[in-house]
Length: 393
Image (tube, rainbow, N blue to C red; front, side, top):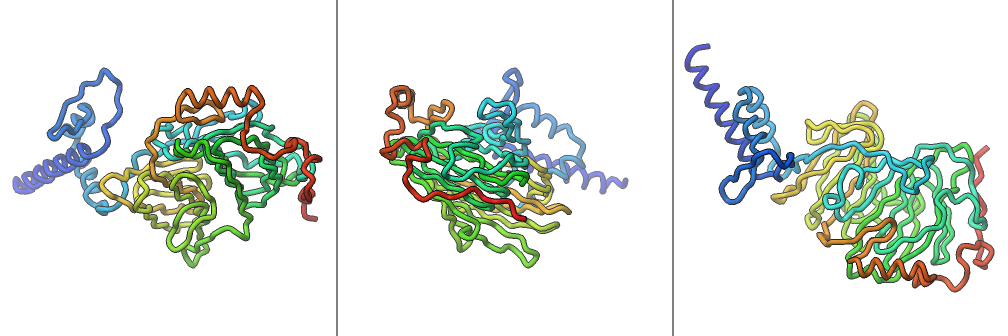
């Protein structure tokens, strides 16, 4: 090439490297093995040595492309920190009950705050339905919880639930049950979907402020007709608002932490423009159907979760659905940044509280708030019961 063109190319490459280094130095430190050397930049910013060396020695076209993407981002666009696949887990210990766990399986507890867990179960074929007057068919038997909020969200089939507050209900999909556990509950789940029909849903655990871990439990169910559904486009894409604000709507779930939870269903090749609530600082998308592209260049597939960088007041992101469309859950919240002690179904402020909850459970004093009859016996309820749903002819 003519000398003038070579000089121009070098100038672009130098500028690109400078911009890329500035971008990396303003981002979260990259995790590397402990033996990798590090050096310090001005104003206390830490940068891993090896990524920096790669940038300084990379071909000009590579660095220019990186800088072009960095500089083309809108000032308020949240960069994607990472995209990770959910992990197989057996939360009940039963090897036949396998879920896809995105939190904490893919996103660790300290990064998912204020969310603790997201287990996706199904799609699977139901073995049969039972009514609220039966103690049979609970696929997840009676078990306790303390110090958390719980969402059971069904996208196919029916949810069935019984608890120590005396609730015995069946709810249809798309619908959900929310439970603010506080001082504690016991409950049993499963067996609400007619035999042969598909069942698909999520169990999601959320943190609870430690100051509210002794509060009395609260509960509610939301059937499909009570769902808050926001149309997104003329093609039929929608956002179901589970909790928190979205545009001019608000979700009906009542949790102890500030969260926004959406079920976004996009038609093929539709782009969804997202903006996080200003008072929330952690954003994740869990894609469970179809595929898409985040912010124009980051692919996300089925059963993958992404986490965004919200630093610097950035609030916007895009999700462009692929040829098969996409469906994903939005997990946005205000991080509590409180230390908790988490042991199985018990989440506590400290070890002393955890030991106290264990003592209550072992001595029969748990849960402290409960109905005055044997809630594990459907016959003791003395209330109107609901027969099991029947499969349509």
